[in-house]
Length: 272
Ligand SMILES: [Zn+2]
Image 1: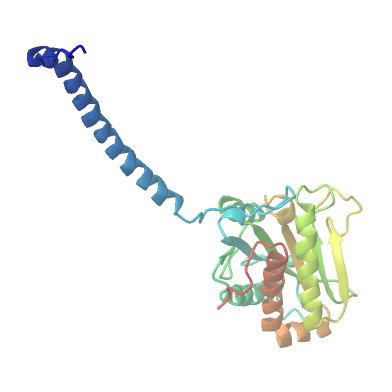
Image 2 (image 1 turned 180 degrees about the vertical axis):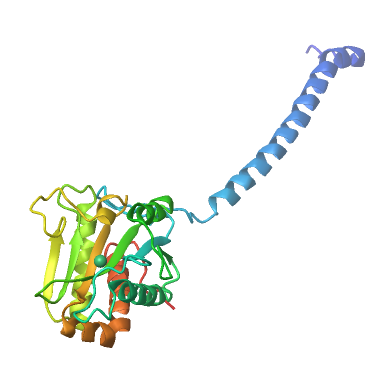
């Protein structure tokens, strides 16, 4: 029976062979620990960033004429009381009542009516009895990048009464929204009570051409309409105007809020 020869361990050789290997393993190990440390901190940052609520999420809507403010949840509406200063506008039968004053009264009431809706900012083209040119009125709205423009006027004629709203002729690019806002406003005004619902009119009064428009409808860059709040020359309309001024103002604000709500652009529960 052969006896196994006992090998003598040569520690010097072991050290020569495994020493560098051990060092290499040590270096790799330390290096990996550092990397793992970095990697852990990176992933925790990632987790934190993933938890940030997407507050800037956009409301997706179809249609090219959606107002620009849809992503801001803040709407800018310009209220334009027609005429002013040396431009009195229409007058009543006895020349004692000027359209510019009625437009401003209604305009200020509309501004007040919108005040309870925190996400809607109102810009007035005028708040005093001053003359503002038509282009200046458009510039105010365009430079503010407003979402809607509502011009307030009163009519005049030898005969006739009632409320009508004018929008750009069908060639207008934002005509769909013009029509919508006009319809909503007219419905709400009719609900308050008008002597006659004269409907929504395209273009410009007294012209056969559908290409002619009221200046402020044509040269504002946003959906717009021009409200003719009854006839200065019709006593019934003057009485209605005086009696229902605040209700008409509330109706204009309510109509716009309802329109935005119906389109999913505004949360009507928000008003305080
Ligand atoms: Zn006018």
